[in-house]
Image (cartoon, rainbow, N blue to C red; front, side, top):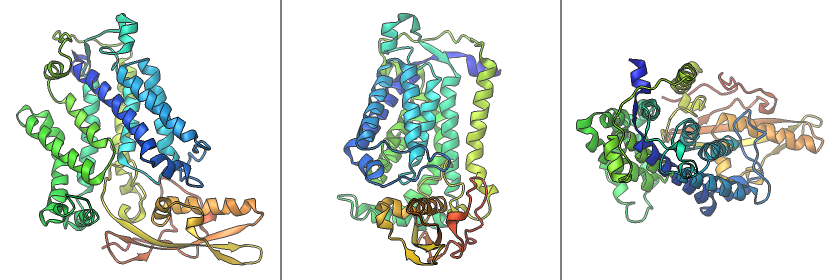
Length: 438
């Protein structure tokens, strides 16, 4: 039964078309970062970047290096689209994209994480076996089928993503529409649609529509009778997100996933009219079956476990942010902080309040006011900067935060030298004050 489910061969039209779209979106995401000024604002102008803890060795290239870096990534995106030296191009893009993702947290976005995962998965998929330059160079590579697991790896990944996104929204500030109203009020100045987004109906659409869409879209796409309705709902949902929330290529990548839910014959007839259609349904068990099952099993266990980890860390994740990343907790809350970093010279006990704009961009200042891992990293950075001047300092932080428009409440123990503490990724930081969220 398992062999039939995973290793029965089906027509590969959906994967081939997805590769083309995926490569194009990788190209657009890369070059878009150059022309929109994202690279300049995020990786060039800042004095330093807040990397993921443990990856501090990943730093932006000096000068104009990051522009060239992204241009090269764009080229690899085009190579993926064209199916040119596909495996090398896919590995190269994955490594480069993952490095940038781990290099900075100021512009953290779930679609950056998703693109990292998908790129890694695409390395192992036979996505260059048709309509590719690789096949043109070496016709023996040409195939019109693929094992069925190549489809289900996307379906399962999406099911995990959307299910956790739906469940995460089921908390009081989302259900009473506090968060959707805040999200919409911040868009009131949008040309043409700003007024529409302020209507009384819109928070209900965003709030409860978001829960229902995320929770039901994959099952509805899998069922033939509801597939077309779900597809048109996806178009509306993702175009709405693209226009209102401006989340890059993520909405279009999500629409591309619909290729794996419609019949391969339909995909072939629309996009690859000259391609022969595979009908044999042969079951071909590869020699690497055991390795595939082990690697796939471990991967999806990790995907299921990561979004649950905040339940095993003390306090409310909305307050502490511990376990928030890599958990498909998308646009769930608004958070604002008021913070001051006080430096105390251990030798003469002289004090100084840090002017954040001397060190951080505006976007970095926001996360250095609300996120404990970033606050810890900045305290460590200040200690390093002053150590280079020959000064041994302590760093004390006075921080108050507001979650979803609530009153500002103290977040951090102000008498703790944050620069002298260690960070543990999977444990609660005891220098954070207990949650005061109602």
